[in-house]
Amino acid sequence: MTTRDETRRGTADLRPESAGANAARESSRDAARDTSRPGSDEPSMSLPERLYAARERKGVDLYRAERDTKIRARYLAALERGDYRELPGAVYTKGFLRNYALYLGLEPEEILNQWRRERGDAGAPQPVIAVPQPLNQPRRGLTFSPGIVVAALVTIVVIAVGAYLTVQVLRFNKPPTLAVTSPNTATLTVDQDTDSYVLRGTTIPNGTVTIEVSGTPTRTTADSAGDWSLPVDLRRGKNSYKVWATDPDTGKVSEETAQIVITVPFADIEVPTLTVDQPVDGSTVENGAIPVQGTTTNATSVSVTASYDGPPDGAPAAAPGATPPPAPAPVTVPVAEDGTYNTPLQLTTGKWSIVVTATGAANKTAALTRHVAVAYKGVNLVVEIKGGPAWIKVWVDGRLDPNWAGVTARKGKVITFTANNSVEVRSGSSGATFFTLNGQSLGALGKRGIPETWLFQPPAAPKKTTHS
Image (cartoon, rainbow, N blue to C red; front, side, top):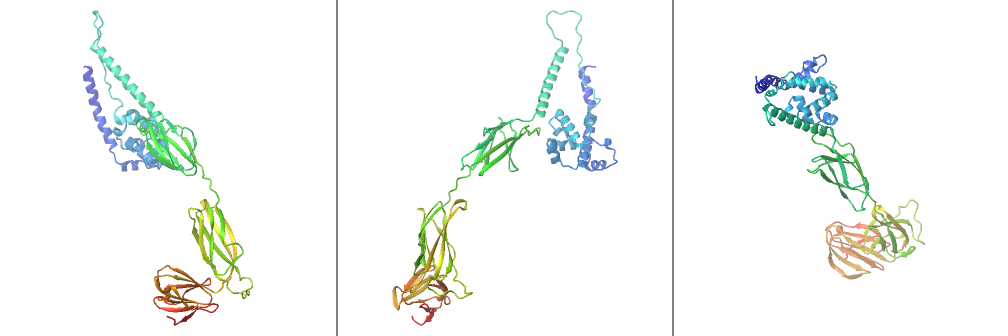
């Protein structure tokens, strides 16, 4: 029988066992679960069933097993299905089976032997190469028989396959390399206005690079040359990053994790400066429209507040339990480009403390206080139109004001009238006309859309008249 006949015969003998291996791989998961119960005869199970049952007993899923063994979940699933064609090769399959068996608490050699049996490797005849015997009669020159040529070719193929498998095994066992080239130092300080940075480096071709910041991972893939880059956001202070590489084919992780710290300095924040030109501390005014003005630096806004300190000098003291006049609402004043600010402040009769506060970046503040006394002389009436336009006619000390002798004032209009004795106002919509007399808010004295005339002659209370 020739070598070719023996080879054909060995191949034919392997076919039934391969079909049996396929049948074992197609066994149901339900049978695997039943045989995995205590008291079942585990050796009677097929290899895929044993692996699946062992993982079920361990109480982990394929993704947890992938993280623990560093073997891809799709390869583990192929082992549990008996679908060895999904695996990269016999050498890888052996390594996967050995590591997975150790992880599941099974005997690795027993698992490998069962795998060989189910694949039909055990006892299968190997092809035998018959090398022809040399002739007894010597020949001239260097000649090669067909058997020597075949043996040489087989030897070359065996050496090439062995070298390839050796390279693959070494690659499987060797973790990927990782280098960070930008920044080229473990710590880096950037400009205080920097809000992002591009990390760069090298690893194996098409390797997966993971960058973790504050427990959140971000991944990128290296190109065919192994170069990778990934932009990251920066915040003020220290920004810490962990970088590692993963071989997507073997699941191996780089032995070392790079630690990168990028620091963004905090900007120096200056405290605002503040001056108050008006009012002058300790001054006395004869009406409540007090101008508050001055300059500031390093500030975005200025706020003005006032608190009542008591009646003015020479005035009778307030009765016990009397309610002090209400303080005006705080006023926020924008700062002009040249650093100036200006706003009027309406106050009633009495002594007041005015606090001016400048606010800058990071809520840095500067404040100044001014003390003033308000002693009204005559009549100071502020008229404000709210909610809609109103027709206005005004008499000052009994004489018709030529500027307001029957004029429609638009919504939001504010007009101030001063007199020695009296101010009389007729409004076409009394409910839309609001009054402030000598710093005291009176609000609207009538109803919207109703024309009325009111006489203001302090210290008497406002009085409705028929003057038209």
